[in-house]
Length: 482
Image 1 (cartoon, rainbow, N blue to C red):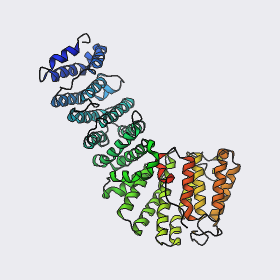
Image 2 (cartoon, one colour; image 1 turned 90 degrees about the vertical axis):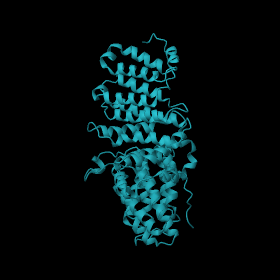
Image 3 (cartoon, one colour; image 1 turned 120 degrees about the vertical axis):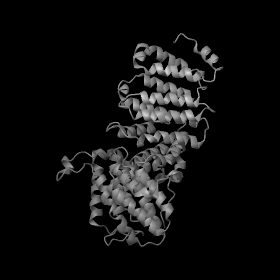
Image 4 (cartoon, helix red, strand yellow; image 1 turned 180 degrees about the vertical axis):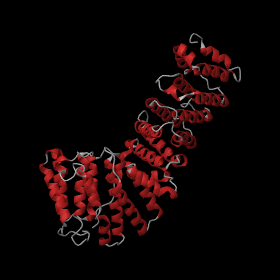
């Protein structure tokens, strides 16, 4: 087979309307026969490589659909146990026929290809091959994007990909496999070409996500990935990102009837970016005081229940930032400081639990408890911020909004004592200057509740300047009120 001059053969076949369909059909029929493939595997491999360079675009949409259906229905789960199979070559070959990187090709072939490859992925027990196929589909979408096609077509391809979450898994691990593989593929993809363009793809995906994925838990998990992907690949335009949450909100199409469920799953699955985005939606729906109170209550409740993932714990800073941003707005609108302090006074307790150097380990936790799963920088940030907040609530429960002598609660005094011990702690030696600067700010009687975001902006810029999704904090335009 590899000795044939296929360039000449293809040139002759252009004279016959259905000859391309017949040629590909014969090739697929032979390759699907596992006995033939085992005997002539190297021949088939060489043949597929040759065909990649040929113009086979004259294969009809109907013929292409028929062939993909045969591959899909013929494939058995056992075929995917081995990393190299005839099916793997066939899927790759049919993808070549779609010509994803060329303009003016049949969108029908591309959508048909995605639909059947997703069906094939659901049968896979080989995790590595599943991830390869998912990454391949994501790359195909990117190729189509660069041809200048419409957003509608990109959305159709994305919808076919996200159907993966609606399929019945063939075993207990397949559904979680789908989530993990799309998650890892999304996070690493886009670096092949212009990152900003991939951020645009993330917006397209976000629009179709909730129209396609029926399972709210899956919606929450994938939505978090898409938000992070959007910011990660927008890194080149980093200074602009302080307002880009508005762009995301315009694509955030969760049904009002499922919002509570969506937020609960976001808490359970540790998805702070979802919660922050939902808050922008909540505030947009109701710009009055009641809406602000509802948003803060939701944020504080979520903050108290969510257990951030290690290496992603810095996302919590967004929730705290939004809480204090709303509180500042309420203060500007004449809400009593005592009402504000009654809302936020529970927040430092939650923060300090996350800031512990060791996880709960009983009476002798400080010596024998399991080491915290969170980074030292996050624990330091959280401890400093919680201590500052405690210093802005007086003994009588009032809020410090004017420069005055501190009237500390016992909790505030204890928190400061713990902060001071860190100065002599070798583990924090690399951050002594930051620690001393923040201690000075906490003790400065001219710094009040109104400077809270100023401190958080300093901490985020010091420790997390490489996290684009925190740009809302670092580029916040809010100034301390006089």
